Structures are given as structure tokens and as C-alpha cells.
Length: 60
Image (cartoon, rainbow, N blue to C red; front, side):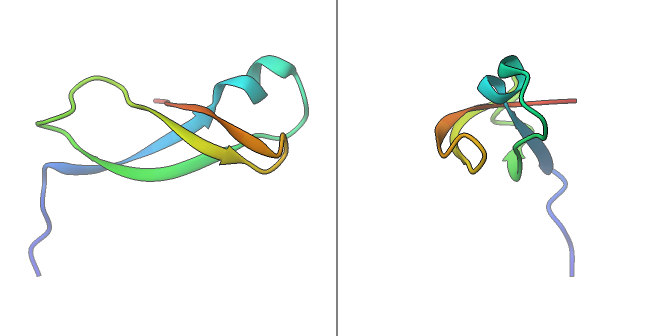
């Protein structure tokens, strides 16, 4: 089966958790269309360590 070459997997990392200095990390994996979304994405995702929704930015 052919795969779509425009869709790529990206890793999202929590910005609030990174700035707080707490141990551990909150990361989520999602996909994006490379042609439609060329810039890095930011999504609100749940952080289980902080127990609230926070902004996660694309890394790498």
C-alpha cells in the first residue's frame, strides 16, 4: 500500500513543563501535512504531570 509522502510525523513538547524545571517531560506524537503547514505547529494538549492542558510546540 502506498503511503502519502506529504504527511510526516512530528513530536510536540510541552513549553510550560520545560520552563518549570520539574523532572520528566510531556511529549505527544502527531502528523502534519508538509505542503499545507510549512511552519512549526503549536497545539493545546493535556500534560499528565501538570494535570492541565498546556501549549505543546513542535520540536526538531
